[in-house]
Image (tube, rainbow, N blue to C red; front, top):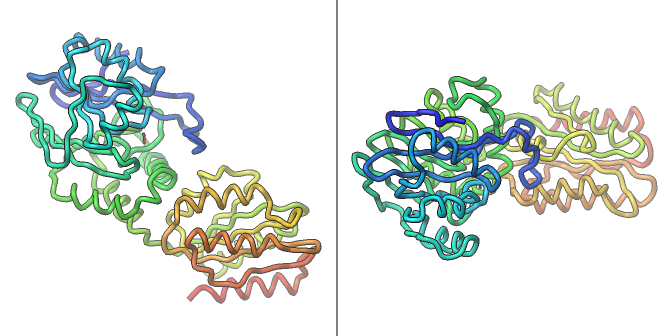
Length: 388
Ligand code: FEO
């Protein structure tokens, strides 16, 4: 395995995780990469490591360029183990290397995980001269951990962005323009939705801080390196972090004997016939992380559940718990469902939607047993009435 040159004397030396299908619950159908970068200058610098278990791949790629023992600095952008997991291993390979981390959170996090190593903590605005090049550090707290930071090299106009602008996408091709753009943009949206959605204000702040930089390449921590579509991914981040919704709907439901399912179909078709594209998700057949990806940009959310033992279905409860964590912005929605006798689930779903921060724009729709043609017409009229 070899290093991949991304600029003069700068190499990608990361690892490709073709098999990873779950990132703590976020379904990663296309695997991922753990990107690390090697800069050859007077001081040899490694930006990030890889997830524990992938150290041999990192080492082999570094060895294809230099003797790893010669590394002077290891920049740790983020304590999460998919990037820092290889630090103890690399600290043994290059024991004289200084590990650069953010102050105070990076230092605290790395020390807690890996014990006392040769750390140097830096704050926003601090720089490190490594020879012909300079590294400027910018803290990006809560994007998505308190310790997160990015590194900018002005001589190269490269932003080493770690989790920001990345996507879980295993590929043999390192650059955006060597991959299929709609696929990487979809995966970038899925990544933003499932990892960063809660932190929109912090993302906006980070975008402002990075706004003045002249960037010709974004070397991310996951997936592709952006060099051709930098404006496109930046614009996506501006839109996603602002939470400005599109005129689209997402309908999510579970069903026991098809009545709530019939209501869901009716609701999705009503949105469609009013000119609002609707995504339709049977929670049993779809993963939450895919549904969240569409919710990121949709204006309307309808969530349905029948009643089981006086509760909503556990599938919908789990989905609402996941959604609540993101506190999605500027969403309008309503709850619906069928029931046999008590029918408590629909009110419980509505309560949870309110706790998610969703503006309830239609009173909960409850139908006993099987919806009649008249009741479905009524639902259609109510949904169409939402569209201004
Ligand atoms: Fe890719 Fe937050 O670690």
